[in-house]
Amino acid sequence: MRITGIETYIAGNPWKNWLFAKVTTDEGLHGFGEGTLNFFARTVEAAIQELKPFVIGMDPFQVELISQRLIRDVYSEGAQIHMCAVAAIEIALWDIIGKACNQPIYNLWGGRCRDRLRAYANGWYRGPRTPESFGEKAREVVRRGYTALKFDPFGSNWRTLSSYEFDLSLDIITAVREAAGNKVDLLVEGHCRFNVPTAIEFAGAMHHLRPAWFEEPVPHTNIAAMVEVARRSPVPIATGESLSTRQQFAELLKHEVVNIIQPEPLNLGGLFSARKIADMADAHFGVVAPHSAQGPICSAACVQLNASLPNFLIHEIFDEFNEPWEQQIVTHPVKVVDGYIEVPDRPGLGTDLDIEEVLKHPYQQENALSLFRPGWEKRQAQAAD
Image 1 (cartoon, rainbow, N blue to C red):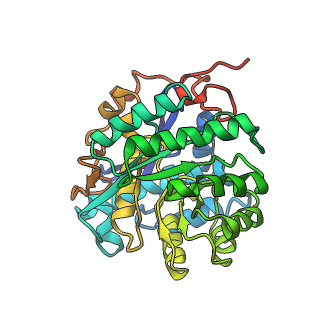
Image 2 (image 1 turned 180 degrees about the vertical axis):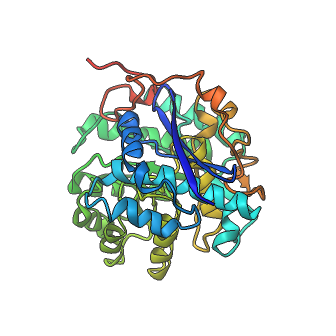
Image 3 (image 1 turned 90 degrees about the vertical axis):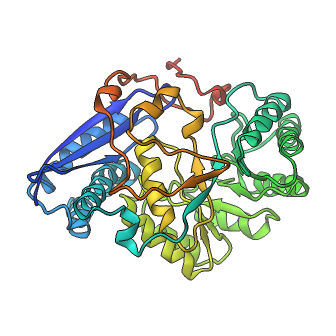
């Protein structure tokens, strides 16, 4: 079997354009992948087309060799943009392999470790940044059966927090805790906002509310700063979604203080790299909660990944809180029942992209989420000023 073509498609989700790739073969099998990257859908799409000559004519089973060609052999380090382009192709290859073998992808990596995956809700708090709004929406999510909620209470703050913003952020977390109850895990998202002193101070202030983790409180680009916060924070630190190489994870893990690892398959060049990083984390007694806040193909891919991980912790779900038409652009969307995802046994990713439905939602340049603009929590398309 040989790869004969790669086509790309963009679905214009109002807060982030989703980029998909379709890889075709001379035996009629095809696979779908995803390369979504906030603000850079067209850029990654162009990168996929520039990488295409390295792939055409290759055997889709040669995932390692193809990945090496796409990363090492281009002799350029394009970080997330480069790796998202590679991931769109690589995930599609696994989809093809699974279909050729009539097996889900996890069965190609040692089988599944569990029948269902505990999920946490994200994106559920779309609306005003008030304790009342967050609390009301948290109650609704818990009524759906979720046992864990993630949210960013910090608005558009950067580096530091004024006294007012510090108290408001803490009040929002308190409101969510009171609404959700003590049996629900709260996962507080920092979005790389703060400097080290602010992150440590806030971690101490919210500790009594027992959050399960404080995610990326400082920029991921400074591993030393993340390690310093992790050493001094009474709340466990989670990070990793923005890292794009195994070497970066090796640097992070060697300090033995961050034990909740969040690899993003798209930023890492695909599923197999993320699977290897999960093994690296396991060697350091770490647990893995892969980042999954992109489109529905990425969600399906993360289900395959998470099902195969002995040290899996929890699965991120945006899908229920995206635009309603997301469920229509794939044949089998990921669904959560009583806070858990049933692991499918369909071949490959277990879903296909409905291209006709995708084309109903064209790319729009303003479809992007700026986490440092006031009101970003509303997740509305925002034209440039």
